[in-house]
Length: 369
Image 1 (tube, one colour):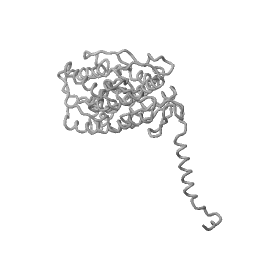
Image 2 (image 1 turned 90 degrees about the vertical axis):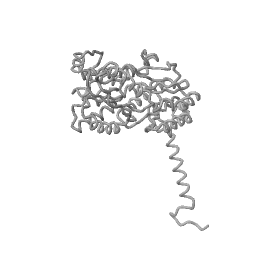
Image 3 (image 1 turned 45 degrees about the horizontal axis):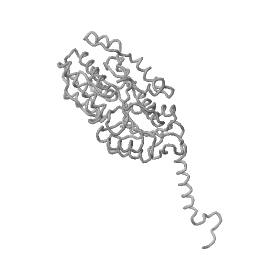
Image 4 (image 1 turned 135 degrees about the vertical axis):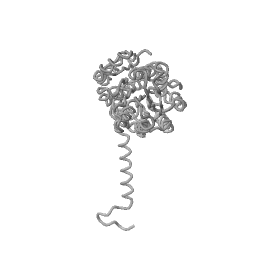
């Protein structure tokens, strides 16, 4: 082999440089993650690994809609407060993707897994594999009978029954209503749907429920459904929703189609809905709140990751939201109930650290059923 000219790379130099760059990238990808930092599912350090922090894997239904964005943001605050690392992964509406995500978390030996299940039956085997591997599992907002999992729950049936009562009372016992739900097989959606439908039929038989439509929790599908309803049911008085973003989408769509008079009634207490409550377009909402939900669930997961003994079923306190003016209208029509104003609901939605922070005892992570 002849001598290289001055300034000319020796043979093999490019390959060596590529190797060094690859090693550098690999080292960077395994660097320490600060407390509360969110990392991608594919790069999660195992529990007790290089980060030195417990890792809580989160499988969400979606990470783009406003509810899930708020949930994640507050969940990251909880992770920082509790000294854990969170790994967030979206199922993107696919049960198969969610099952794969759970299996990846098990393989990565995370310290706890939080799941917002798309289907309460299809995920049972994956949840059982995780708990059998010694990993605490929390099914968020869903009651799933798997193998040793915990469930963080809301008073869904009671809350949505009140939404139905407010709907029937506001309409004076007569009118047309449609209902937007999430996904069939999702515990929260199914429970809220059943409670709304049965209460409306039993207590307000003069109110006609013209349609119940699944949306997969997708605001775009809620909008498309609303377009169809505006044509099919021109006398529709109100759209009820099992989740806030669906109501927000339905109301915006109806207004764009020259139906600003259409009312909505829903659940979850997102701040984006406060203007609709204030102007009377929304007659009732229920505060669980994406930020409260996100912080609470990560707090529960962090405590379990660190060895806390918690009840299998945990319940979050919730609040009915309406204005004083709407409450007075409903009282005139025979319905009274405890409520908070939208302004008070906004304060409560930001108080999640005082409700569920690390300084509180484990017993404060749940209310009575």
